[in-house]
Length: 349
Image 1 (cartoon, rainbow, N blue to C red):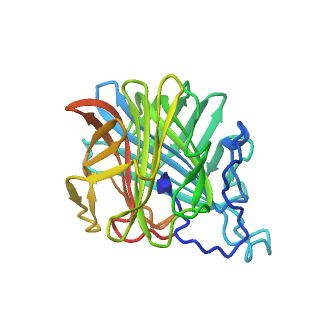
Image 2 (cartoon, one colour):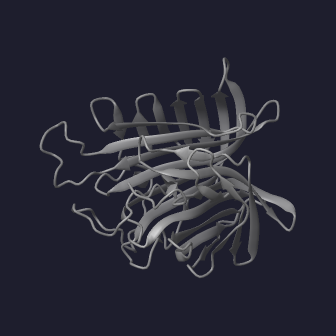
């Protein structure tokens, strides 16, 4: 999920005629790697851990969003924003002490921004994410860092929920089409100073599209995507109300042999641990979290506490999105990302 669930649809009423997400609609590739412009919102979300040649660990996050505004007011001229594109990129570096991040936004067209419908090919100015064969390529030229990275897929696509239909609330329409690509092999370079540094590592990609996600009582969500050392991949999430109680939950554990154990809303628990308070916004985030699913309990600890991302210049939210290490029974079992939204205030577009 991205804001990363950047589920940018926080309520159940819709003014425009967006298509519903329905069960039983099979996902088809390569077409479903591309954009789905009829739906209200969509995102391609890449997170990962990389290591420099001198042994420093870094967290990376790249997200491209597509949004279709209310079609009742769009389409009157070629300048109407029929499709809007946004992107976030972030770099977690303990040596820097806080998250480096940047964001861009543009309406589609005019050579400024495009999202192809045939495969993953999303571009905003000098930012891009493309799929070539089985390898994703990202080029990000942010204000104070650059990323030129390749993400090679070897594991099969993991269809989340019921064959890609992923419920996010008590009503069937509160859902997304959702698949993941865990255990991507990362190579490339990152520049934060004068010269780029070569990096290698492992990453995770989510692709979701929807017209409606959150129940009106929801304020935000917690989400994890973990590449486990035994070759498995764990995804879990919960949607929270104003009291912190779960409105919905779900997830999956994909094994190296291709089998997938999918979890119901009653089988996933997030238990907050240590809190960190942002010195900028005052928001308090549970940056240490225990996650319980059938047969597995993991403790999540952050690469660094200050991984708060302020996206008010694009999708309008403040949230925590950070690189975490997963341990079980005192030993490291994996790495990935934890996303915490709705802790600053109720999530709204």
